[in-house]
Length: 341
Image (cartoon, rainbow, N blue to C red; front, side, top):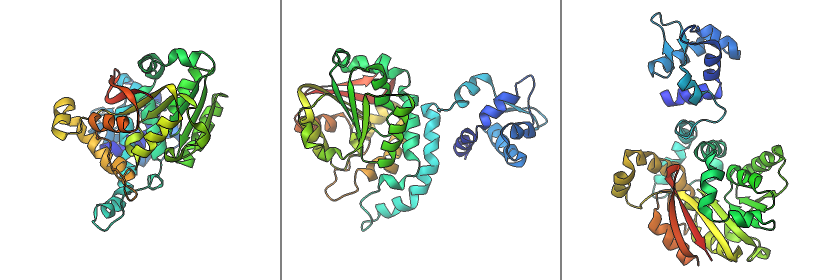
């Protein structure tokens, strides 16, 4: 319940309102907070009481005056939640999917789910990506790829597969204006949002296309110097076909960089390596990754926690060589696979 109320407060900008009208020296009433955002006082008071009970906001001994500590305001008062808080936003989406997921569990039920079943998930994933990568994508991620010199030379072609709403590739395209970027995704709504995001920052070196990675443009054979996938391989029903297509459109001298979840493929090893936090990763996989990747006959159904061994085996089977894996230095929940043709 506390997590859901944090999501509610962030959407209504109640943390911002409380921070703007209150401090420890001058705490505020529920009415003051409500008035700041033109909300109903009674509802705001109930929310404040929930936050106080959960030790998110502070309340005085009268039970009538509230404030938000500066160090907490720095986390909670933002257009983009930090990853650990953005994950709370998954709760309403996943709650809605439970009835369908119960059907999926049945022996004679649906094979899986479709991305269209998850209302608002694309935006939440985008927010989580921003929180995870943020300022790291150019400073810490790009040096791992070994592709920086190629992107700076002026004629490089880049493809991003499963781009979602475009955060990663837009950030990279902004930093390397001489390179040409193409990004694809199966979800038309995500492509529309990505296109708008690129237009908002006046990018002219990137285009977004609705396309299935299993059937890439035949004219793209050996077209791209660099191909990327961020957290989308394990969601594919047939990642083997998709990776083979990626191999086809990669230049002989090109690089393929795949970011995915840093699992071992074994629950005991995962707990030993990462602690009990892996319960979230397995739970998240069950809610979306596994059913999305199982939603057709013959699907491989890997799920998010498929692990390094399976990933490397699949990359090799798809034709890639010189495969190395590196943990992200700023996020141990992700791993980068660096591959060549």
